[in-house]
Length: 147
Image 1 (cartoon, rainbow, N blue to C red):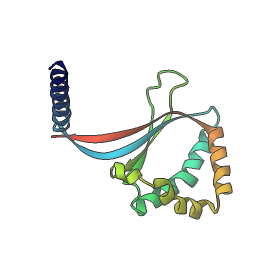
Image 2 (image 1 turned 180 degrees about the horizontal axis):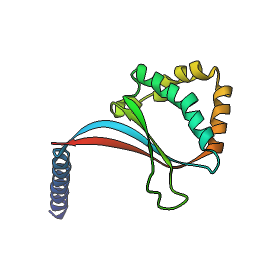
Image 3 (image 1 turned 90 degrees about the horizontal axis):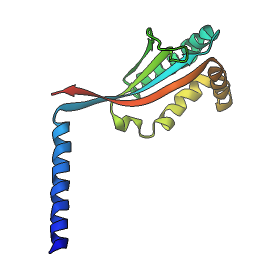
């Protein structure tokens, strides 16, 4: 009898939990997904960083957008730095949904190779990039619209 009571309590708790989760999702509609990357530009490297964005990152993002792999991208500045080690520039890349991330690396490979020629040339660009910035944080966020 005690075992049946424990099972019944467990089932009731599970039902209440699922009702709570579904009620929370009734408050909003899920939207796009964004990768947000916050970077600190190392002292004296701002021109090199912005040149890299203009010559390497922006053309790749534009190609990804043209191929429908991303919805868009944006760059933003931190105008209220809390301390010298805080981030300077934020990058946001918007995807249609979570499914758009499935196999993304392979989907973007052709675009990367078209831009850089081969993996060793791409690696040289990446090596230069890490001399100019430090990644402070990287987030994957889900945008929601209130119902």
